[in-house]
Length: 296
Image (cartoon, rainbow, N blue to C red; front, top):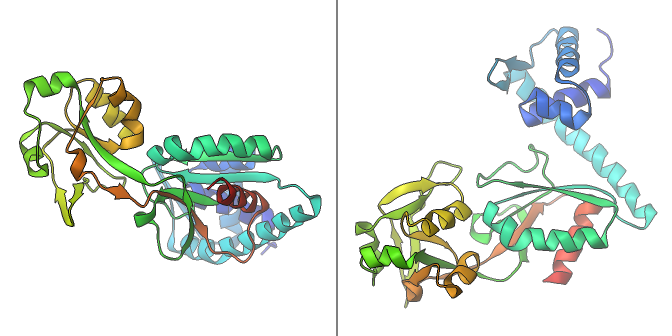
């Protein structure tokens, strides 16, 4: 069997990471057809099928999963070693990939990234806004941004921005046609806008007052997976939305939305930047972490 090269394995790892020949080819700077030929040649040399391919999906075989699990950390160590050389240049360079919930990206991350890029011209940042929790390492992300309560305990997390508070809102016209709720339980009889997480779970609206905690499963006439869309739907008069206070502060001040149940709206820990504990941190991530600590 001809020796397997690092380029052969890099092609396989990109396909395994993205589960897509097109996205893997974009990362490697080649065509999907060339990548498919490279994978087929690797499988022939190994005499093993590594990837199951259909017109709709790309998945790993058992052998492919095992190879990915064994080889991926080694390539990560190589990347870390190369990143460590950046310290000799005096300024951080490279790309930083961040996965963030859409609300956190808009409220706290993007304003911070804009200032960071101005201060570090050698670094580029890719932000992927996604409500679903991802496997950061296997999906090729350096860091993530989420509410503190959702972050796994094996991650390093630092505060990103102020504490956040919820807000229950609808238009003035909506409340001309429907009674304003004075208690969270009354939401069950009103048209509401539901939020479904990437995991498929429908969010139960959370309330707290005087040490009493409630989770209310509202009657959702419309279900969305993005809080910005929930605000837009509320502005269209569809129903009552549960969102972050900072998302609707200006709209409430302008009178376009009205808050209810404000005394039941709790504060949250706020958003956190989190990343895996690794022996060697890429210079771009190290610079961003330092920047966040200073900005906080």
